[in-house]
Length: 350
Ligand SMILES: Cc1cc2nc3c(=O)[nH]c(=O)nc-3n(C[C@H](O)[C@H](O)[C@H](O)COP(=O)(O)OP(=O)(O)OC[C@H]3O[C@@H](n4cnc5c(N)ncnc54)[C@H](O)[C@@H]3O)c2cc1C
Image (tube, rainbow, N blue to C red; front, side, top):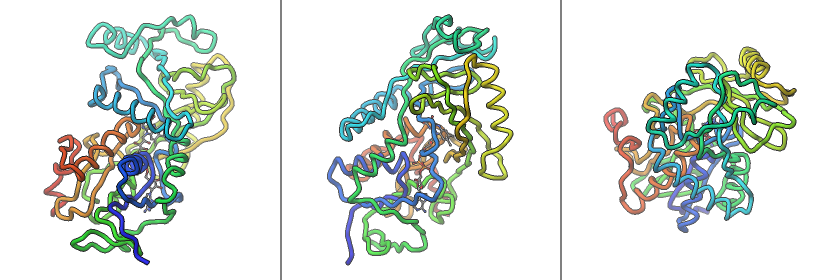
């Protein structure tokens, strides 16, 4: 028997989960397809929202708008599932060099909203911190494992576990058909898999490999994120996520010996207390040359939409842009120009 819905969403990572959350909230019909065997960046990400970036410690793109939106959205999500998924976790920045200390201190006194001084003596029991430390306020940790799990439970009546093959989809004037489902719009939130999609593969994706270790560190307070030339993020109980690498060029997607050795050297240099490595995993970030999301409807096939390209900042970008896409389709609202796929009209129409 055929089933009609307004939306068919492909992929239940950060982006697909937010899209389904907002559709569910507005009572709009949808189905969401996810294949647990395909690569998911969300399932290995550390889940940090950090409002500043880079060696110059500047504010990230649109953070003044994205951050309050994301905090409200995750808190609302959390209230709906009665499981804690968002936690305020200031980053204690342990300066890895004199140059980074100078950079932090400069930013502290210039155009700074998010930086604070920090009393390094409170860290000295756990860390070697010869160049001192500072604090980045308004940082949050999202429990992405719980987010994906509870997000799926919440919409279980709409969820289909399957691999979606674009060649099984047919387009018509009313929308799309996939197996027994007829939808007005199909929205691709399938991360890097979109690179194989004939309708969207011209978008300038540049996959980025990132590795991380899960490390047991007994006694370290899980109330903060610790950042030096590596990032140490509270994970569960006395486990911490430690990473990461950013590789634009790589020959395989396996955990590497060289990454592990690099992390061990960095942990040995910075930590004063014992640790034990318990896991090592890899993810591929759906990044792109512009470092801006891909949001909107296909210029030639308006039945096809995309919400993707979240790169290294999915936790803060995904809720905001999932909502923008729905508001655009349902109410004709504007999509942020730098994120709108209209900017690729010529290559998508070629
Ligand atoms: C090591 C690492 C650390 C990171 N740390 C952070 C961080 O601290 N903060 C932050 O904001 N971001 C971080 N990121 C980036 C973040 O993970 C991504 O921006 C975000 O997860 C992208 O979400 P997505 O839903 O667009 O894609 P994905 O999470 O990749 O989701 C795509 C989904 O689609 C499904 N799928 C794909 N193809 C198909 C198909 N054909 N049929 C059915 N299902 C399919 C996949 O199974 C998956 O569930 C990190 C990434 C990595 C790799």
